[in-house]
Length: 380
Image (cartoon, rainbow, N blue to C red; front, side, top):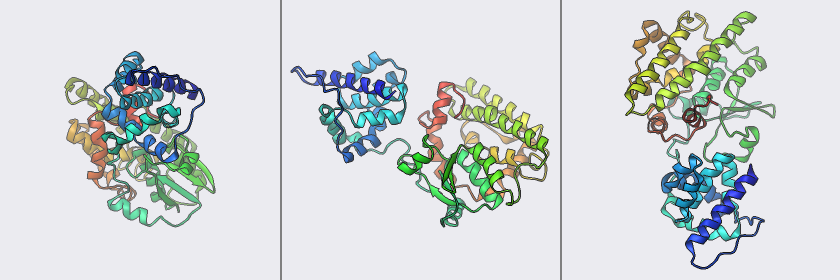
């Protein structure tokens, strides 16, 4: 895939050089000449921004309409860099695109320097307005978990998948060291732990694991003496929990995300998607014994859905969602989840979360979940 991206970079470089100079331009040497590291770092962090905010060709490139993308990009080196990143992202992955865009042949260095002088280069990258750390009660929890432990929890305070694991750690009193991961400045060590670059992830006795559902099960197995357990001891009941965890992951959450990302000027689609979410939640509710899924015991099913219940005020304010539409039993269940101490201790201030979800509401989010919903793929 990197070879393919490299070919695109070379092609687009030739188009731009031909369009910007009346004199013939020789083809670049086949062996890339890396630019200096400081320049590469700045370009890498701003490349996505160039294509999103400064390049009308980006929408064409995202659809792999490469002819239109090349034509539009020929007029401007800024456009070229944006299209290079977008086409590269579509052909391979964003990290490959950034790698080749920031390490292209020496003949492209003037283009890179033009980008650095352009106003776009000093603007913040997408989602950079995300608050850098947990706030409110979550910040207090973070402060209590700074000492070294055999379990290191790599966290993003804003991520609901991440909050699942954080809730489990707090509910069971498992010792851990908290480390915040900046989603736009990931350290090399974190990428070694999780090559996907996503939270949550952990290091346990020097070995790494990631993916929220896997981590929840791992904590049950690795810390059996820390009570309460979040899975029943009976094998059948454990399996039954997993059936409904699967329902949450494959039915409820995709419907939740689709409703969040439904355009405000599509009321019929919004109403149909909201009904889809209600139907999925009612199916889960039919199994809820109250106050929690399994009765008095707070279990893994509750942990898995709690972060989205906690965030449903966003759907209520912007997408016409109402807990009451599901009846009193759902209202009571949602209240029980939202008021659980381990949930409150891992929750940041609503205004900080709103900044993130505004991007979903306006169709601007670039997360893996947002990309999956737009493409009609299962959630990652």
